[in-house]
Amino acid sequence: MHASRGDRLVVHGRIVGQHDHAVEIVEVLGTNGEPPYRVRAEDGHESIMSPGPDCVVQHDKATDITGR
Image: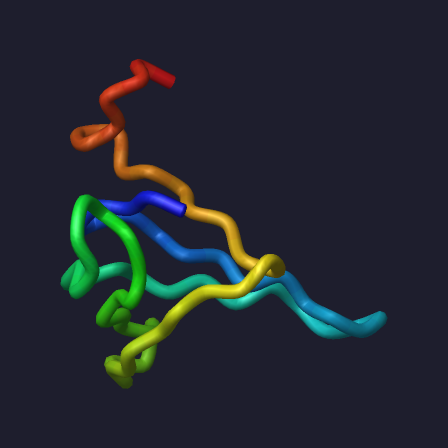
């Protein structure tokens, strides 16, 4: 997994009825964009995450080097 500051990390719900949860990556603590990440939720809460297989990165358009 590779992410940059400003990207969003989406954690998919694991059970029926549980919604996805999205947080903003405010700092990359690993090397070369690798986890762990300092993230901020919409309510302002910050934590450090090492995402699992139920997570995807939505790249910020300004930092997306692939042009997608």
